[in-house]
Structures are given as C-alpha cells and as structure tokens.
Length: 522
Image 1: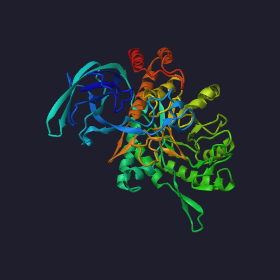
Image 2: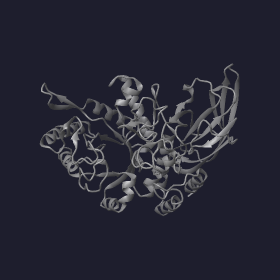
Image 3: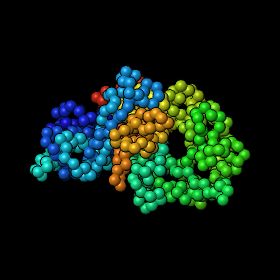
Image 4: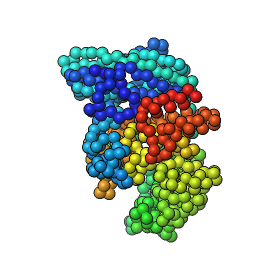
C-alpha cells in the first residue's frame, strides 16, 4: 500500500511498488530535504489530513504535495530539439515518448479528486537547532468515496549534520532564470498591471528566491511614440514596479532586460527590440539606445539601486555579431557607468563588453582554457544550458534522469565557476503544458521542460521535481563552498566518480547518496 522513493529519481504512473515504508534522510541545517511516496489503497481514496509528530519538538516545517503527471510528447533528440525516433536517443533518455512522468507539485489540500494511486512529495525545511538524529512519524489520513478513513504512517529518521546553509544574502552561488512577464497574463487570466497580476508576480519572485536565484530579470521599458510613429521616450513604469517588488522580497540583484536581438544566429548585427528595422550599431540605433539608457540611469540613481542592479544587453552574442554587441555595450558604459553587464555568450572575443560571462555548457568545455584566462583576469564565469545542444549533455529535460537537474549545479562547483543561468523559468508558449511538455519553437519542439521549471496554478505557482532538484543542487554548492580548501579538493575527487563532465555522469541514486553523505560528514 505504501512505497517510499528517493527525491532524486523519477516516478511514473506505472512505477512498481517497492514496499519501503521508512524514510531515512540526511541533511544540513537551514536546508530543504524530502522524499517521494506512492499510496496504492486499491480503492479510490483522497488525502484529507496530515499530521507530523516528532519525538522531540524540532524547528522543522513539513509540507506535502500531490504529484501531478505531465505528458512528455517527444524525446530529446541526439543533437538538436526533439524526436519521435526512439532509436536516435534510447541510449540516454529514461523512456520512449510519449509517456507520463510525475513532475508537477500541487499542495495536497488543493486536490479534491479520488484516485486509486496517490503519488506525493513530502518536504521538510530544517531550521537551525535540529542537530543529530531526529525521529518522527508522519500520519496521512485518507478517505474513500463513502468518507471512511484510514491512517497511513510513515516512520521518518532524519540525520541533521552540524553544517548550516548561509542566508541568501550571504550565499556564494549566483543564479538567474529568465522570466516571461507576458505569461502571467496568458497562464493566469489576469489583466496586465492589475492588483492580481502584481500579486502573482510577487509569488513568482518568491519561487525564484526559494530556488536560490540571486538575479531577477526585469521587463524592458515600453517605447513612447509621436504622431509620426517615431520613438520619443520610454515608459519604465512596469520596470520600476517589478524591481521594487523583487527587492522588497529580498532579491540580492535585479537585472535590466535585453534591449536588442539578432534575427538569425549568424547575422552580423543586432536590431532594437522595439524597432526591428533599426540596426543597434547604426546612428539612429545609437540615439535610441542613448535615450533608453540615460533614462534608465536617472531611475537607478533616483531609486538608489546602483549597488543592486546589473544589465543584460543582447542575448547570446556570437563571433559573427561581436562588433555589434561591443557597440551596444559602449553606449551602455557611457550612459550607465559602474553597472556590471551579465550575458549569455557564444564567444570569448568580447573583452571590455561583459563583466559576468555566461557561456553554454558545451561552449565552456570546448574553450575552457580561454574562459579560464578571462577568469584569471578577475572576471566572473557562469554557465548556462538550453535546448542546444541536445543529446545526453546535462540539461533540465524531463526525459533525462532527474539527478541530472541536480548535477547541473554541482558542475558550477566542479569547474570553479560562480553561477548558473537558464532561460526557461516560465517561458512555455504552447497550449497545454500539462499534456504537451515540449514547447513549440519555430516549427520544431524544445525538449520537454526546457521552457519551464514551474507550472501555473489557480492563484498559485506550482513547483516541479526539476525545481526541487535544482534547488537541492544549489544547496549542495553552498555546502561545498563552505568547506576548507583542502576538503573542497576532496569533494572534487569524489565528484569525478559521479559527474566528471557535462556528458559523463552516474545516475545511480544509491552511489550519489553515499557520496553526498561523505560530504556532509566531512
């Protein structure tokens, strides 16, 4: 009737019962830890009440989530995007698409339906003061359609080590997940700039911060035009509101949004987002960029945001458009001095135009020596993942092993980097992300989950198991960085047994947990 599973493995509607009824967990203080379980009562039941009893009162918060299955409609392809040809990907994906996997976490009290199988994720937030072996019993009260109740008991043994995660303002890891403001309107049915809109935005910010995001991406300002349709000014009202909320919620940094893009990846120049006919490096482009950035600088000064602001200019500069990017960066440096530029990059030939370099994982490994030179010169290096390259390489795809979503943050530490970026926090643009996890993109499909790591709910923002894994990886990074240097090198030696590169990794959960336990004990 009851089966317990590790939080680092995928569960499916047809996952076999394992008859494991005890949860043995290991964690640091100020950290999240959890496990999954499946109730198979044979008849239709629903969860109606929970009760957590510790043998001794503990500073531990307990939350229970229902696991909603999501349809992975196509598999990650060998090199790019997705495929329905299983022969191309069977060596690295978990299952042949289409299939369902439990990824979405819904607070249990919001699920009213009766089911023959009840999949759950149980989460503990362990505060300071809970040290040593902590024991307790979690009682799950379930009822059938005739309102007859049963109680399922789960024995919990929680080993809390004398290690503490720092408060967010003191964390070492930098992280940014791009945010789609339009999808608040689309996915929640609210009006732009309404009270409900900004309440949801605040909740999205909280979800990002919980996942250890340190940099919140702002929207870009709207252009104001005269009767001749000429741009005469920019309206930063939404930008200011978004920035104020993010900082109120405790975000360490806010990031000005990109203001230019390329049409094709090998174009030689960028165009302005609000006027695609104008080349960013043209004279008119200079006038408009200066107008935009000078106004942004006056707002930053007025708000006192100088130490809390960074800027992204034009996503993914390539070797082809490096000169165009440098022109944009020079205008920004002139108008907004002293503010760091952070950018996802596809080349290392941008010195002076970027302060925080964010190459893609394969770009970093191909040109590691070059990026190491940049790092040795005193500049920060993060890395990012996206739909390309596909294949076995680490990403947050729902048909790759779940543990990979955690390893992504381990690799930041392994390579001595300082941050991680992903474009897809809530960027899904299809019609039904619950039944078609592969987001449509230019006539093709992105790997399942590449465009989103959360799910829109009724006045809520639901986490995912990939979100849980990435959050756990961020916690691990902080623990690694808190160790003395000699122990950090030992951690890297252990990591060589698990994830020595972005394409080579061990997904045996038992081996992962044994090494994680060694690290906690070190």
